[in-house]
Length: 497
Image (cartoon, rainbow, N blue to C red; front, side, top):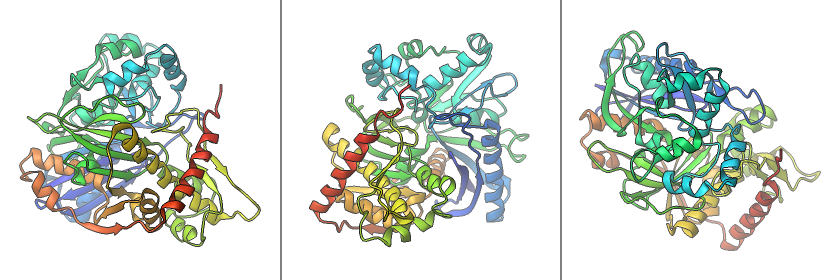
């Protein structure tokens, strides 16, 4: 029997079929469209998200030469803060999905912060007042779709992140749920209580009636509806946010173990164990995973909002490259960056700076600057932003990262991974299978259905492909990073209404 490990991400949906030894026997992928109706606005079609999941599962089955009846379970991991509201009676979305990168509620967050609510938000939710999270997105939809607030108060509207939307539709509307990891990303969840926060619901003006029920990350919740999902009823046995899924698949089960996923954005997570970490000034506190019958594990997270999206911008908007793989040889063609720096604040700056008004910037240009400098600057920026977070983990939380486990698309870029090790001064470990977000959901579903015996078995199956050793001198490392911080300072607060 097989587990369909579904990774519904920002740029596409990937499905890995796992066998009873947690090996990948089939893959499917469907791209997803993204629209930018106004500067700072990022939207997707919720129906396309659903259709891509069903199609990618079918593609994976065809790739493996298997049938839908061979599926023992489905695990779902998802882009976390992306927000959907829909009619309970019809399943019709009230508005396009507002993507996690969307900045339209920056003003609302600034007003809440100016009114002195930042400390309450940080204490209760572990998050910061930023438009990245779901709560202000939900309130925006309720305020801007005619009649939405009235219908929500009457219980006729459902709210959720992408996991909730997918499960609702895949089960024919029989399950309206979200797991603890996704709930912890809404800015509506009380970390200490493990439930929705009445104070935050009131503060953000989100009524309780549309909220999903909160469940563990690994459990059989419901079965798919035959009419919606390939003619079969399959247990949905895992829901987990994409970055927490990667943490789980990387075997970061113990406190102090850390990973970075290089996707559309980058997300550095370090497992802090079953004790809730104390409030932080710029890092996020979040639920790492919740197994059925066990207390949740927590993590500290640094969310970097533009990584792969910066490479896409280099390719699609500037035409500097035609394929992301070209960045490595271009960067390697230079002996140094020649003082050219790129600040990837294409959606503001996330951790540890948290400046939604920051904007992207290229600085240090001369007549000698060419496309290789731009490619190298983008790759270097990805590594610098990771160091920003790792530095804050040490300074603000007292957590020293001694090894970074890397995954995601850019983990296959050897130049970037070597520079990452150099600028951090620690080893970077890349596994054989870098599709860890999908694997994490499959592992959790396999645990819930008894296909896998436990975490020890899964940890033993992780294999390292490459370990990158730092080779840069400490003086050079600090010189480069110091210049980077100067560039960041110039990008901050650029967008002023």
